[in-house]
Amino acid sequence: MHTVWKGTISMGLVTIPVKLFSAVEDKDLKFRQYHKDCKTPISYKKVASCDDDVTSDEIIKVFETPNGRVVEIKEEEINKLKEEFELKTVSIIDFVKLAEIDPVYFDKTYYIGPDSGGAKAYALLSEILKKSKKIGLAKITIRSKQHLSAIRPYKNSIILETLHFPDEIRAIEGIPGGVPEKAGLSERELQAGMMLVEQLTTTFNPENYTDTYRTALEQLINQKVQSNDFIATEQEQPAAEQKNVVDLMSALQASIDRTKGQATPTKTPAPKKTRAPKKATS
Image 1 (cartoon, rainbow, N blue to C red):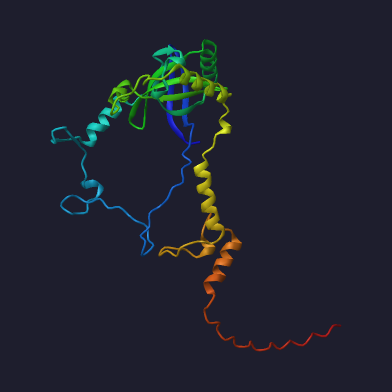
Image 2: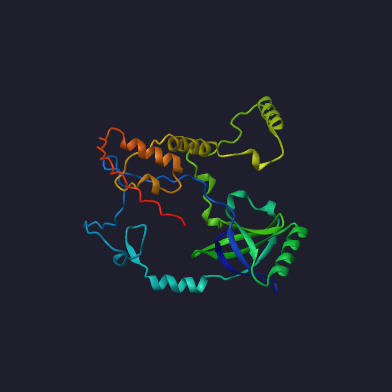
């Protein structure tokens, strides 16, 4: 796993050197865009309104105000703020019950692993969280963004959940048309709904739930690969050089298919080789 963040967690006078690792991975299949006619990848250029192509050193960062005016924020100004607020020591501010945090606040999940010399303090924090049935609240800066975070036990380890700040949660009153209350529900309808919930209630097992769309998409791609349903592209490599696309037999078959219909050159018979006389044995 790639280390996302490295620093320390402090709880009072207890300091724990730790590393952060992403607990989840993106399984979405990535597609590229090609030009339909010439079969080459689509690229994106940075162009200003004056139609000039621009390079990275010609670009400045600005903030647009609601009235349309802009202010420039220089890179050195941003770096100064990063140095001031880039927290490498995460101090637990409060301990709360997990049930008190609505799931709408949760963002991303990270595994916390002990760094060198921190195994004992790490184990101590893990046991404290388990026995108290509480989670620690702290602030952490990851990739220049500050997060509120929840530090909680998970199996035999500790995980960190980044949380949204309250002003990042949109008010539910902002839903267009409003949210209906009971909308004239009858007691009979409510009882029937509760009965349905009871019938569908089970113990949560994450292995029972899979991404059926992604599985079907993978199968579709595999079918096209196995049937050599490729399109010719400008940057296409010889089939034998392609990596992680087809196996050797498929590459050979694709090469054979490409040569079908081409004229077979006339072979010139090779001259017969004259055998050298055998040496006499004494």
